[in-house]
Image (cartoon, rainbow, N blue to C red; front, top):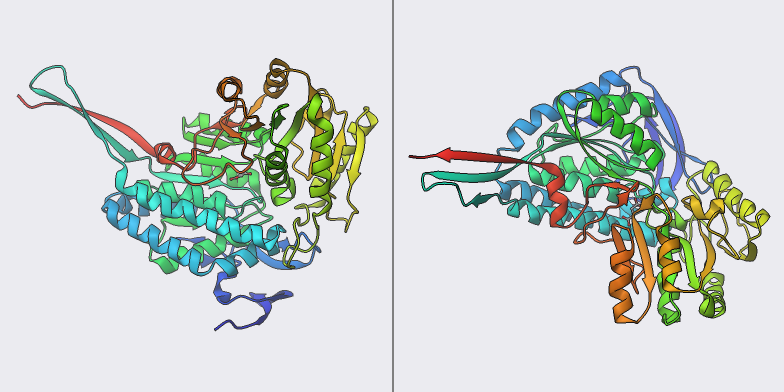
Length: 502
Ligand code: SIN
């Protein structure tokens, strides 16, 4: 039965803040790191604060690890992987299925924790838990299909066999915008393939990662297979997760600038890496687009997580003949958005993750207006932690708002006159993660899909993320794919055996 907890979180006799939270399973709230199946403080007893982005109240003090703690995690993962890789695929799959079941069983608690530390509205947090859990189920199923092959050989006395072997220890750094799903979609293929896993979650949102660890333990995975290292010293922890010889592969979701630095560290040991980096998604509205569909796509692709996703549409490229119709319909939809505490019912947008993000997004709006863009609409600001939904037009390609990943709830409209110009504008960026376009012309759909230089394209669709599809970018948006049957390939090495059996 659901018991209401006035949670008073105490950690080594330090009172961590009193918050109202209704968790059915209070043990999902953990503040120590999870290493080798144990909950550990930092060796030096350091902790760091985690705040609710809605009101800046203290939620928890979490273990702030240093390099020696991370070394323990790598050592544990290295040991655990040796036996895990030998477990039959069916056993790996059934443990992952057990974890999936636990995530679904506790989805309401996991969503509350997620909203508390990240800010997104509860219904989106619930969606994220299901989204994350779906990756676990998908890769539980894929574990059974990591097939090798036999290739026709050069002579009747030879056989060429190809194996897909787990790469080994996988380490990860994950972002604050999807504190559950970004871990789930990296750990699930790693464990399915026979790898072990060490993750450093963002210091803004470590609680969701620790809640996953609690469920991993409950599901019965061997100690050391899944580890969570929490901390604020990103540089030191980054080195500890990438440089050791025991680490085979590193996977990162975050900004392109940080991704480039981490990739350079991977190069030192020729480590495999997957990089899911920044985007600058164009959202193209052709003259024959169906306006109600365009608005539905705009609302999901722009305002999900208050605009804080790497696939959020960033540049609205609208055919000049349809601009007024688009803006009129969009204004109606935008005026229905409500910003506020994500834990409260009926909210559509939560706060920005921190003040730095608020200032960045407000600065981009301001500089666009100073450079000649026009403010068409801005909702009331409901607090310092929020950026109100904003619509600006007369934007040009050279403005910072067009060249920067906004990561906030701002629709910035540029117009174009023909398809060639739309494609040129859309591709005029170093990024290549997601793109969207709306048209009903079948030949144009093929042409534009071909010509857009992006890893993911939504055609008359603004919602493109799911576990069955290969998620990832081209150009400076990174490399590797997450989800789909392609996703497992990032976690296996190809080994070829040439056997002479004469
Ligand atoms: C991201 O913003 O990094 C991921 C977004 C998604 O999975 O849809």
